[in-house]
Length: 161
Image (cartoon, rainbow, N blue to C red; front, side, top):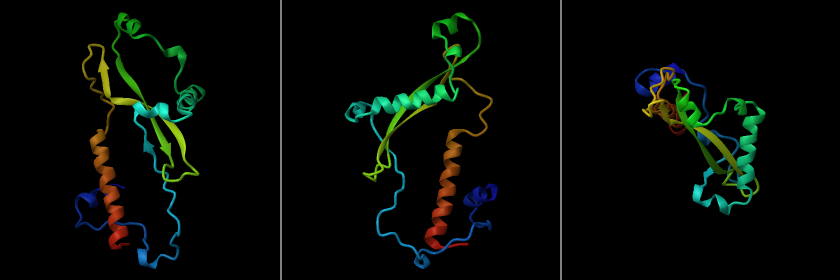
């Protein structure tokens, strides 16, 4: 992987890749559109227009409780946390609702995700938290993913091996 990333940054360097088949040599060409599993994000203001949206959100939340990702035993109010005078980092959760397989009427279904907002973590003084554990910043991860996708797309479009 490191060689792939460095090759995307320095294209003149030779990088080993998996063998690819040029598109014109492909034996199988689907007659129907591929099911790509595209998720169509639904704006929060429109959630009420989709029957079953509350059930989708409840299923996601219940999955966290069932897998013991979260525990009621460790939850306390923000006021109690402030009164404790301990150092802490406070973050927010965000619920995302989307149509899974939006391109396929037969497979389409609502899917909810509850995610931690890493961009809004504050410390006990309400300052933006500086986390020492962060090894790669999110923009760096995005740049790496973009470079890898471009490398793969380049091999598919222009051949390579």
